Image 1 (cartoon, rainbow over the protein chains, first blue to last red):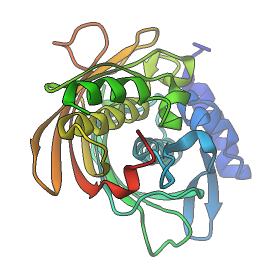
Image 2: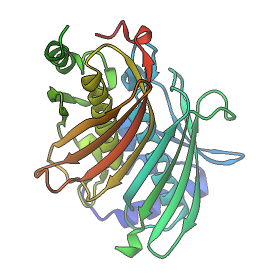
Image 3: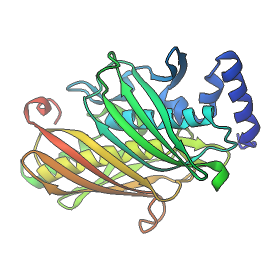
Image 4: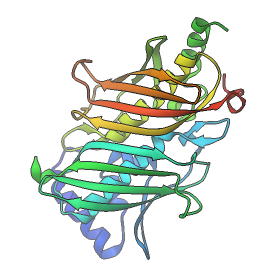
Length: 152
Length: 149
């Protein structure tokens, strides 16, 4: 498990770019695998999907997906997006993360799209948007800063 | 129910009433007027960086968000539905493998409509936190929460 990650990241990135096979990427991040996150290529670009399952519920009375899960999904979406877009040889460290919740997350799949707003010498800034059945009605918006592996 | 009774019930039922909290093995270790303390046991599933043995910040966010919600209920000391408006995490240092994570969350301002919360998460030493956080919650009233406690 503790083999150097760089070559495995490069191989997974190549498989994703050449064959559209993103599973190898999710496999490299145990917590993304735990959440059950899927990476998919759509006409609009990379999309992350969190298939609904009962274990993700935070409030069974509503019912609603746990707010922490929505946040963790979006943070993972940004991280995987960065790993796919930039040739990082290590997992970039998170500096900070801020999320605004717009609607409660119902018992449906969540989708996320990420935009890397800026890549500097040391830090990358990402914006993440999350929705369920209607892309025009986001359930949460978030932004994150990552310390790039090259800057450590 | 008085405040102490409510706090005891909240501590006992926190995981039972929240499927994802139960799924993560999270529990409340203290509930009082000065806030709550939550505990998350280490699992291999939490890793974000297997090469360096670092825990993914996302699971720290799950712990903090859960603790912040509990802190609001502890402050209100009554059944009420609250919803997170926003949450801001600062990851002061990476959380490392094989160690559990603790979180203290405190609702430091409560108005009739809004609750403001701050939280700290750490592994071995509280004075060396892995994350600090701020959150705001909106109070949505008793009706939707009646089934919970």
